[in-house]
Image (cartoon, rainbow, N blue to C red; front, side, top):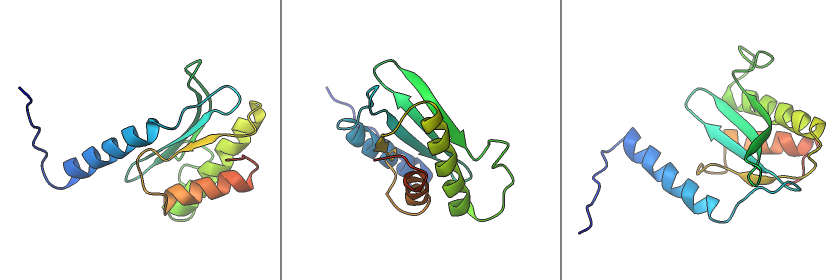
Length: 127
């Protein structure tokens, strides 16, 4: 017998919807050693980007608004997301990564997610 899960309204519903979308995206997106996955995790206050090789299960590069070079920086959250995108691209290129597969983490490709991706492209990562 199947049991239904009742999800409350508001934030719990939003988080469940993001989780469903992320699972749906991950069915098609996987990182390889030649083309690792650029994962974006977004919260209300911070944004984190990681370059992950799914075959080996290792993080090759990462950047966040919690890094000392970005923390307390000027600008709004979109400007900070641009800084994170440029920083993760710089670190990925230092690790020998030229091209990545973009994983938006179930979030819409708009706002901070798009700003991070555009900054990473401008810094030289290929999507």
